[in-house]
Length: 158
Image 1 (cartoon, helix red, strand yellow):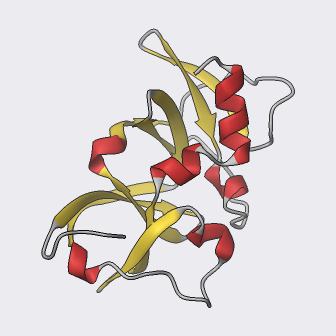
Image 2 (cartoon, one colour; image 1 turned 180 degrees about the vertical axis):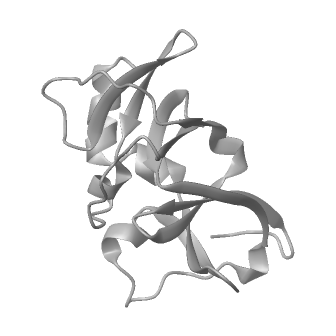
């Protein structure tokens, strides 16, 4: 990740499948309780369905499936983080939204070879938090271009 020295980035910190991830706050529109979802036929298993958010139809994505993370039972206790990137709005299912943290660019590390490729291919890097451990910083562009999401987005006319 190329950055100017001592630049700070603000990330919403999320827990997904017991791991911690950060999404730049500029991409997070809002967080909502897990909604009632309408299933959509003939889509990838990571597309859970759609719901109506104040007149806008939002697709709900289970990113456990995209990043090949251990399955977690999705319940009403989960949250949906509404993400906007490249004029596309999607909801990602998360276990918990923890905080918004400022991360100094000098503390962002390049993923190492011993980290799961299924995770790092969707990350700009990671940083080590003193309490949470490694926090993977999600690359929204890479996630939105994932074949599971990208193909679905195009069928929506996005």
